[in-house]
Length: 324
Length: 284
Image 1 (cartoon, each protein chain N blue to C red):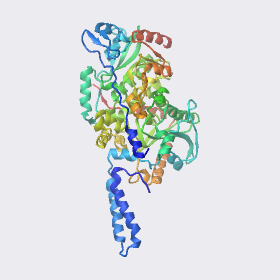
Image 2: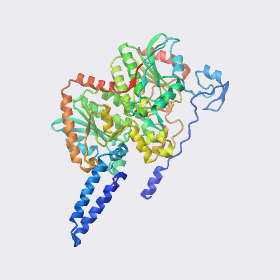
Image 3: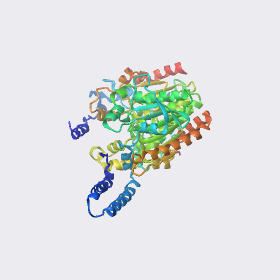
Image 4: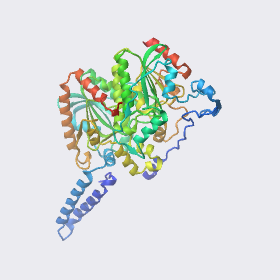
């Protein structure tokens, strides 16, 4: 199986390859290899624990971008039922980097919006790598306003390197599109639950990310700037391109779920199986679904006024400064 | 083309030339305009609101110069002047954030990248804020976000018009997600402000990009820009690296944004106060 292997995972895959080989030749050999096979399996398990249970911030960023990682559509198909996709911003075009529509979370009718990334080159071209143009951001807003009108809670999924930086995106008002989403979402009269399932790239992520409950998957990241961008600005060109620089930037930006939970910027972390969500997606679907269901139950108890007041205060408090 | 070739081609960035405009006008009696290269008489530039008399290039103004330009003499009273950043991430790459803050304070004589307060425009009391690009590129961290939010809340409480002069490269990366969340905080405050009928006018000056343009700066009832100001979401270098092409001249200028319907009007600096006053008269 051709798999996408990250640098720090290589030792595991080396051993795995040996194991596969051993298993293949085992029936042909006269000597019994069972002991060797078991020993190797044990070694692999130990190595997995050693490597995967202490991922550095930069390693987590790499896992968050893994092509095999479940994408928004996988979550939609595995957490919700009766999904009906709704297209377009009704202004310019249907931006496929944003997916959205109606669905049932158990027996609750909800509106789902999210960034959609691909798992291969062909899909990624279709979805523009999950990086929306203004019309994608406005499509999400249109669906959320629709949800508000018909009293449907909004379930949002974040997975983008950022809003697309291009000529047309600028001409059609990328900045204004993001700003409008933030303003409207802050006052949207239905609960908004946000789950960062992979990349949380700056304004393009936040444009779907303002809400009442914010979850992050264990290996997702959320940052004001990409580690690459930060490294290239602060460490200048050639040094900024090295993985050492990116690792340094990833650590400095405090962009992991743990760091952000510690600082009160998110509400909860969805644990992932060793190695990341793609190693056992169904486990993650179950855990995230549980978190969504219980959050929704909690938020539905609040009156609209109380909900909006809490949401305002949540963001109002964010920031660290000294007053003299 | 093989995959390796494709990746190689992908990495070939178009070199981006440094922009010719300098931040400030050098001292001396005569100087050269960084935009048109004409020799200009310093005093004339200052008299002309720091606009090149030959080519109309608008040089950047400091927060103090902007207050003097737009508000009635002696009417400005600053709010929250002592608020300073507290380095929430202990951020250090090549240089520590604390050192950057100290240097910015020394260079600008300011505590942070925005000055807020109240003042008068032709005897009309307004809540006013002005960003200063000299302070870490006018970037928005916790203090800028908090001061903007307080200004919005104050204007809402006191039923006063709000005028914010923007000049910023975007969110301040040294405060990480705290900076990104200032976009949410200020936008949420604007949402509340808009429930009442108090006008909010933003003035976009060179440059206004990133997290500031993608939050409070573009949420105004009216957006005024200064001529040729760079306005956009992504910076030109990031766009050029993404699309692997050089951008056309004047792309992301105030004029192009006007053409695409993203801003309300462009006003020459010499007419700015007068225009603001007239607009406020219609709205308030």
